[in-house]
Amino acid sequence: MSLTIGPVHEDFVAEVYDVDLSKPVSPDVLDEIKTAFWKYSVLVFPEQTLDQEQHVSFARNFGPMDMTVLKSAVADQKLRVREDIADVSNLGPNEEILEESNRLRRLQLGNRLWHTDSSFKYVPALASLLYAREIPPTGGQTAFADLRAAYDALPEAMQLRLEGLVAEHSLVYSRERMGYTDWEDHERKAVDAVPQVMVRTVPQTGRKNLYVASHTGHIVGMDDRDSKPLIDELLAHAVQRQFTHIHRWRAGDLVMWDNRCTLHRGLPFDDLRFRRDVQRATSMDIANSCEQEGIPVPDVSLREAAE
Ligand code: OGA
Ligand code: MN
Image (cartoon, rainbow, N blue to C red; front, top):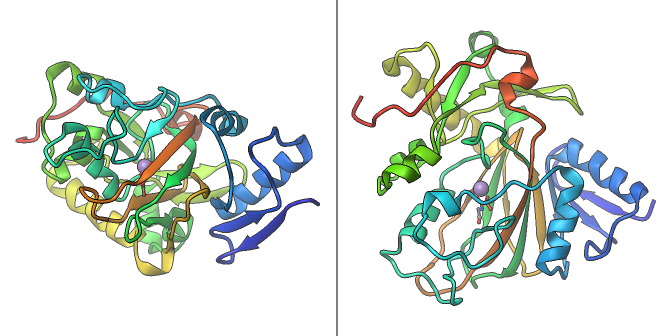
């Protein structure tokens, strides 16, 4: 109908034109967007002009808002934007570029690891809608990986091995990978591990995918000597070039992705020199991934790094 959809790959990433997201979208247009979203998993809407309210209003079409984890993860920091938007910029509360040693900056550098948003929360994120207000002149692209294609390409023996397995996810585990351990006790408790299934099915398409991210720390019921190398092997498999796409930002781009079946990571840029103001409104999934797969939900909690 009114929209123009330009696929980038056969069923991964599409650009969407001829829609103004600053205004409420009609039910028909929303249906078209959702159909494209389920099919392509990543949608790029160029040249949008959105204030925070308009950004959040559009995101609400995909589920209730996921509140930023930053409030509990770096409890001493004043946030620059409202709590239903995750500030993914390199800026502080006074619009200043964050200094090298700043704790919020160091925690946020974890966005450069391959991850899926809020898999460390019991009910993870469904759609993330990242809006670029200001971008650096070089670097700072966002890379995406298609976890459906990655699952399809796994040897059948591995697909069978993963069926029904549950993994523990936490922000502590991803930050551990990059040497960030500066948690206050109450902050660590607030980001305790949660269970997520390792193979999930997106109900709208029936496609299976590998649900593993740098937030994944352990596999329930498996010895760490086996589970850590397996997690790393699966992550390395999932982010091979043939499953990935790099988005080069222009100010005004709104990019939305399905966290149930994609990974993403921010690529480096000189964040001590250039400003990058990107803000994310995120809608929550409908339930924990084990619940959605009909798998009993195990009790899990954070394990010590030294274990
Ligand atoms: C995010 C994220 C990466 C980037 O917004 O969730 O991980 O490139 N962003 O900013
Ligand atoms: Mn993210």
